[in-house]
Length: 438
Ligand code: GLN
Image (cartoon, rainbow, N blue to C red; front, side):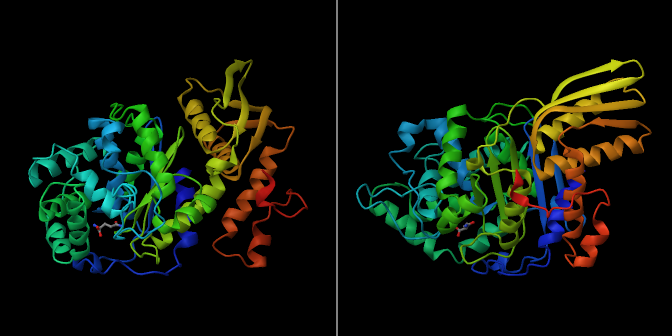
């Protein structure tokens, strides 16, 4: 059901064809502009994904700037925050990703998310004297652990970017001039370009994001890769600088730490809850994936992701699950958002010997959001399809509202009044649907 939802979101943004693929790197300019994918990874390691076309979510593309937060995390993990701060700051620059800028007082790059800061951060890995190959191998290994599978470097892409990277050379010379890096400019740029050419899928990015959201433990492999402090610092810096000069608007409209790359990837983390990713190669004028941003805006709205919305969360949705006579009774509690509903259905599916009659007790449910309601409804339909008789004890009408939401979701592809009417539930309420009601 989550895949269906993701697919609906992709359908809504599919026709937005604004922006264009990055053309300053020859191989990227040749990229197919059309793939569109979204993925999310829960903190217990379930990855859900969808592609507009089958397989879009399994396509590999270069990680590009999305490597920056992870190499920053690697530097923090290996050297400690006190050492890393000597090389790179943590203030938003409000500038484009490749801006030729340093902090006026310290001569350090402002943050590790812009190229100046990223080139300097990369040089911290594997010691000052490391060669390019050893350094980039350390980075490739580290990112592979974060993704939970072996990632490869696209060597053709490295050479292609190397042909048109004068701006990064300018940055490396500037960093050398101020003593921020010691390496030859050519080696510093090559190391950085290698890390940008690591190939990932949208699913990989969701798992990497979920590792940050999970405080540094990779949710699929269960390996602890980063200390809790490192995961926190990385996400904090991402939240103020990850989307470059669009970082402020992003924080208002989406509201979670995020990072984008020029190949069209975007990832976001909701600390303590979920990792998200999207992929679509055409970029807007800030260098962020045009449709990727749209996908995130919708996920944030539907799933109630915005960090500043301060919705109560965290308690398990299932208060109890018990058999009474011929009925399995499931008592729910708290707020039913995405994470709660997802855990609810997994708990029910795992429950041995579910009886034919299932009663869902909503009396202790305090609130819900559209995606939580939609998942409740779809889960109930599934139980019915499996032959269960489902009863609900729902004094606050969570389920009728879910029906109403679903009409809206279904109508999204075709917002004509007639279509909406056709999708209206005959038992739904009279008042207009109000997205802001929760
Ligand atoms: N390799 C690219 C560059 O340095 C990465 C930029 C990006 O993804 N924003 O230009």
